[in-house]
Image (cartoon, rainbow, N blue to C red):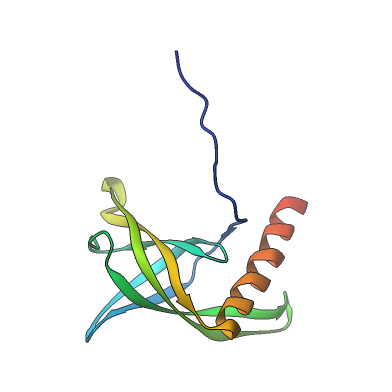
Length: 124
């Protein structure tokens, strides 16, 4: 007997494809976002990241009305790795971060983007 999968996420997520910079001390890794919420992010990296490592995360997020005066602005947060799993066919790793620190301006940009994109996805 199979048990149906239940999504227990308490926050809305938006699908994304932003390039991002991950910093730990002087080391920098690049990645690409998969989805984003106000307090979490899933991304893909070339290398695995250790669980519970805290990293600085920087990426550019579209601000403004879609298609009208939209510009990209930098967002900076700190996050801890809560999941890292191999994606063998793509030769990449799926990494999930929980944001531990995010300045109010960056958090507002993320929340605004997620609300906008999740509404557009539901309406489509």
